[in-house]
Figure 1 (tube, helix red, strand yellow):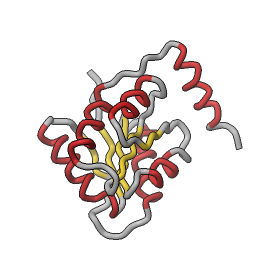
Figure 2 (spheres, one colour):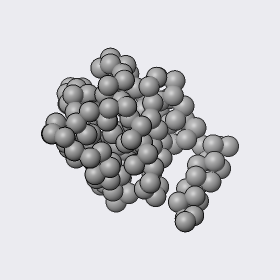
Figure 3 (cartoon, helix red, strand yellow):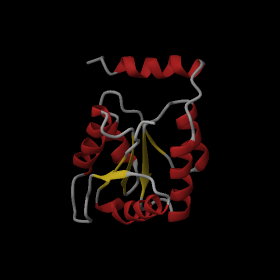
Figure 4 (cartoon, one colour):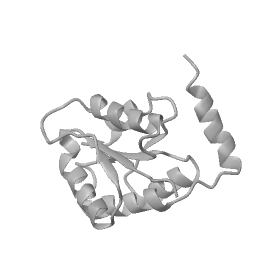
Length: 149
C-alpha cells in the first residue's frame, strides 16, 4: 500500500487552526508534513508554494492550507499546475469539491470557521473519493488550462 503523506501549511492568520488540525491528525495517526509557519507574521504565498510543490513532486498526496480567510491561500495555490485548491467554509462544499472537482488542496479560514467545523471538513476532505465519470472530463479540462499562458 502506498504511503500517503498530507502536506499542511499556514500563515500567521491560520496558525492556531493549523496547530489544532495537526493535533487532530496526530490523534488519528494521519501522517503529515508541516511546511510552516510557526506563528510569526509571514506572506501566505510562500507557504502555499511549499505545500503545492510537495504535492507536485509526489512527496505529499494532498494538502491543507490555512490563512485568515482561506481565500489568499486558495488563490496562491491555484497558480500551481496540477493543483485544484478549494476554499471551503462548510461540509457540503468540502464533500463536493472532492467528489466532483478532485480537489487536492483544502483551504480554510482560521478567522472564519471554528475548530469543530474545521475538523469535520478535514475528515470529509480526507475520506471522500473522487467520483470520476462525467466529472473526469471537467477535471481534465481544468488540467488543460495549466498549459494556457
